[in-house]
Amino acid sequence: MTSTVNGLGAAAAAAGHAGHLGTESARREHGRLGEGAYRGPETLAAARKGLRVALPEPSSRYDQNDEWCVVQQPDGSWSEFRFHDYHRIFDVPGLYEKIFYDVLGCDTPRFMADLFADALAGSREAADDVRVLDLGAGNGIMAEELATIGVRHAVGVDILTEARDAAERDRPGLYADYLVADLTALGSDAARTLADHRLTALTVVAALGFGDIPPAAFRTAYDQIADGGWVVLTLKDAFLAEDDTSGFARMIADGLASGALEVVRRERFRHRLATDASPLVYEGIVARKRGPLG
Image (tube, rainbow, N blue to C red):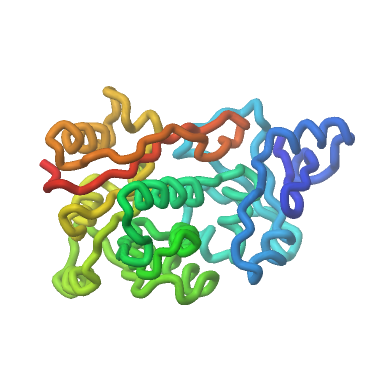
């Protein structure tokens, strides 16, 4: 049993990808979906509206690593997409926005950009003086939100060619540079390119702790940022717990304890809904880089 979502937030329930339930069921289904507040590029509006996405029934619980949906293809058939199959999702214009923003109500890039803007204002620094390294840049939504607060220089890094292609397709001109690179094995040419950008801030939003960006890659990105620069990141609550096995909890805790990271803003917030409608709670951190990570 799956739940089908049509258009920008208008929902109906469907069994076996066909056949609608009654109005009351559809109303309840709509109530469990995200707010769909993210507008995004006008060039994607028609694609997002036309996509049909079906989620598992809310009674089915999946670990965040295993969440999935099915998407109707132009020929009427349905194909399964796991949420971490980013290379496939980015290939379909508007699908990333449809799943995570229109259906599941993600608002994390805007939230973190605003939190960063507050920190900059508190430090009396101008956003247009900041030079950002956006790690796990994906299709450029974080750069889009950074631009709204006045950031004029952003460099994207992602391990996926499909991510860079999607950013250039859907949000051209937002990045001064976009590198497809594995930061656990950063080559000399890529290292020189990053150094040439004189980076003063690192953003890693909704990208840490699932194996997409390992701790070693985060450390390499962190090392590209000037001392006194900014670090803007999000982590799922579980990745900050003492029993975390991803390596991030220890790295962040050690950075805070040593003074390498000086927290300026720190807030818990709802990242998005899970497919069973439960909230996924993340922690947003805006910090100053005061030294190397141990």
